[in-house]
Length: 236
Length: 236
Image (cartoon, rainbow over all chains, first blue to last red; front, side, top):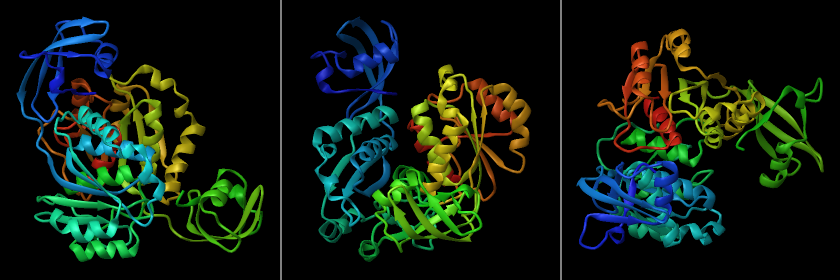
């Protein structure tokens, strides 16, 4: 946790004082090993970043005096679309993506996605929010990404995707193309990443029809987490 | 497992027939759900890649007729140096790095590395080899990377590093520099990545003295796995 994220509810009404009682308390005491008078990086969810000065530590709460005087980092101008992954992997991917500063995330279906994945509690609103906040705590950001979940491929691509890609360069990661992924695009990007084994030809065709360019990352088959951070940091 | 990696011991002497009995047997039966007559991608450790045709399946072994007629993918012209990480993370990192096609890996110390990490069994020869092979199975490659373990920072940087970086462009990932990481270097690279929290100023100075350029990946603090794949796929 590189940034402690505060919500409006943490503030003692009418003051710049916060009182923290949950996992953040534990982190401040056991990981940061902070004492009264120490400063910590804090940020208000969807708001500014700044510093918190610890004014009191009790067994079940920490109080800080908070100054929020800096804007969070600029959002990455990239919309990420990825095929639903195994729930255990999903947690790591969504946290990583949130840490990277991606603010528009769309989880879609593909022929090769196991149907059972869609029933996983990881897609519930509360779980999702927890993973996104963990990512922001890692990346030192406060703006919670928007996550859309679209379990039907065709209607999503036909009805919603054309508007989503407007004003962006759309790429789809596809191992079976001759075009290597370009570098440093310099404009907003939409990036689509398939499941293990890739999108099937029908799906790639639908995306190309919609305006996407298929690009590859080399001969090797990489894990979804490597593919996402590799493509994002190469394109942006 | 996208490629089944064979060793010389798997071959029935004097034939092109292999007999497999370990975790690969389980994978072929339970994950691939293969039958007699099916073809599978195989590769000989440190050798060629090709196809295996299943000739017999028994409860405790699978036999294949193997043709190894293609070279493995070209190695990535990148030497990766990273500060030792938490053992649980190390397994994932070393597997990922092997999957990416990096063949020279050096695990080093840094002031911010917890001393206990060096005692972990993950650094044992057998464990290391297992993670490297898992990476090759993922990335569809056969060439086992070389891993050097160097638990003393200063002698490594002073005595060994100058030779290691010869003929390469050396970069060190460092959040506190104004220079963004460049793209698509087009020549061999040496890349050094610090621990959580980064190298300390003394260490960065030693690396710069040795010829390294300090580069950053943006304002956000990313997890070591994202940093590695992001930097590698951006530089190469």
